[in-house]
Image (tube, rainbow over the protein chains, first blue to last red):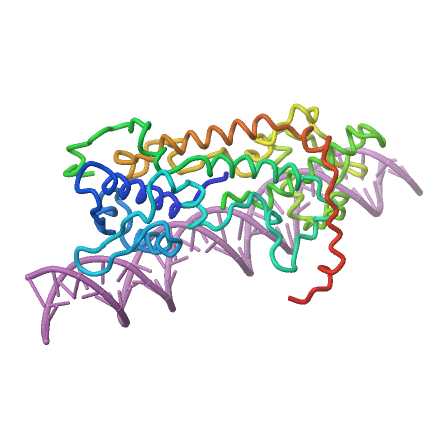
Length: 157
Length: 157
DNA sequence: TCTTAGTCCGACCTTATTGATCGGAGATCA
DNA sequence: TGATCTCCGATCAATAAGGTCGGACTAAGA
């Protein structure tokens, strides 16, 4: 339950990778294209492209067209929160349908509903958590499980 | 995003109602049938029945068959956590697919994945939150909002 | 004891969302 | 100026959720 979509997963991976390349040690400022990310993480190319388009539309990354083109972060890593990333892909956070009552219609259970208030409380806690965590937190103090992986490049299955 | 299913929603409403009736003031120990809950909250009868069956199978409630039958809580309200309810309906908590590596197969991105560890951290936080909250917490101090919405009823688009 | 009404229970179908894909438009470098 | 590489929008298939139907059981009432 409460599983985020694969597209959101891909978005996190891609942003982490872009941040590592751009803000990292090698060739800072370099743009990174879709193909590079897709091959690195075994993500379907076209699907990843669509994810990156969405992120660009939400102004989290900037697209550079043409040969030698690609994507670059629009802001610094510590200014991009996990909540912003996830909301760009999956829409606004909402534990239940009645979280944000959209135009006119509301759920039939509203008037007798006793669980709305506590659920919103849970939702706020999660929102607070996701907003407090930035892309920077995903890179700095997280000793990845298999570091460097110099061999992973040519690994066959 | 991170929206729980309607079945989970219905499960929470039903359990809250059962707890209010059984543990409440009027006729303690009385069992409450599916129809009563469905009409009270405008839930599709058959769908609610299915939800209650699932809850019974997970030993959160007990079913009493025959006329005057219905459901009753298997434990006290403060011994049933929100996590238990949600997991009964939607399966174990898992932010991402690789949360609980199931037999043999794992995601192709694992070896290069830098986001797994921080995501599991987020997941743990949410799990802790849901485990700390019980059905009892949903009843006590929640004066329903009763927005009333006198105009919203007849609004046409 | 028998009937009968009311309940729970399991399998099935429809609809919506996600996952994945294809061809076209625009821009840059040689 | 040409060609190639990139991003971009619309389209299709697969999966899971939402909802529905009929059958089996139990227990109360005559």
